[in-house]
Length: 584
Image (cartoon, rainbow, N blue to C red):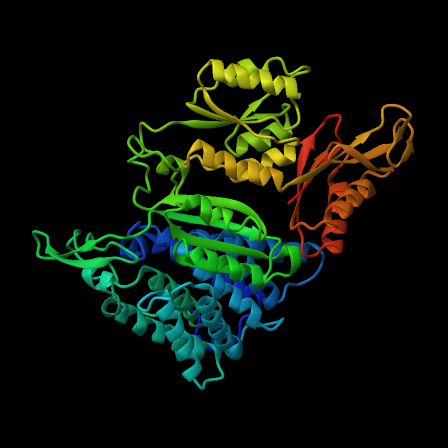
């Protein structure tokens, strides 16, 4: 039990924005502390020992988004309210959700945002949030199973509802205690848990969040039983996961052995530019292809809304293709649940694998192909952005002639090349020919700008196969519209009128879209025009003409004019291009 010196009566009866952030930070700490315990409990829906990792990853993504929201509001001289922070938690969780449990957690956090008043989270908010979470989760799941996190969530909401207290402390305690009782009963409710002698892993993770709320409010985290796995390490091996059926055959220890009929792959991706009706259509389509179907939204509106999609299936292609006509697919992740570490690749390499939340090094055992990303980018700040993200930076020089030798010199079995607009079509053809002549397994992706290259690198997954990795990276690059700002070298006639030498030219894609003289105003105007077609993330790479005050001016103007859009800026150093813009 965690004890703190502050008296209970000095503890808050409601949570403001900073209190919600404190709770989220403590949740990350507690999930990190209990990650291995939760992973060890993970035998349903598949025994892949990653529920704790997925919950932690999802909660960290939620916290990052909420802290960013709080910092952005503070930069503008404002003060965030509890609702703003809570909404950011939910959206960050949906965007970063990992695994079935992480997707469900995202809906719990989303519900807090939908229930919160602007200023505080109080007892009524907490009751309403838990009720809303139950509704969101029930609507999102294809086939809710009792004895799982769904049951624990439902009982937590019921416990909060039964409490007549007006104090958030008492309502939070009632919810947590009811969840703990429900968690202890999951072992008897689900045969796969009963055979393994454990409670549900996802339910255990949810209880940690509920107990953490009590701890933040009272200074004492509730004392719970030891939910660790049985002392017999083989007790859970018979758990085959979702959709399994028990056979009458016993192993040498007398335990019933499960005859597995589970699907092999976990497919996850995000969907944008869609709506609730199309999300429902996708959910129905995925139910015909597999199980453990979850399609959940972040509560956003219009093109800024996002849905997290999760399904266990044997048909990876159809599971992805089902969404092609229903929105824009981003951030595809595929995990081989029967071979999460890729140990069977020598005999079965049909599809790439990668355990969600695991590092690429951990997911790639000795003997499997090594892969590198080669980014063609000029030395300096831009190159550092790529190398910091794990890529090898290749200097194109003045003519690009040294790129082929530099790429061929990389020591890796597989290579993904990001041209970033630095190579001509003829040079890309020569590079492709050289790679084929050397027998190298490589993909050259169509990144026409540095910002497209960075977007592709952000979703690089070295633990998947080369083709799947390239598909995801190419999709991210294609979803990133790009523009740049240069000075006209001579008088000329453009699509938007005549320019004089020294004028600033805003180029969107490959066409001049505006002519101006103010660096700050020009880059803001470029972004304004690009966002008329939608977008949720703007990336700015600003050259030396943008000192710190100019950069702050750009960020302030864009964040004020587009409050629902995330705007980030990086230094690009000197160069002919004064600024680069990417919109995703």
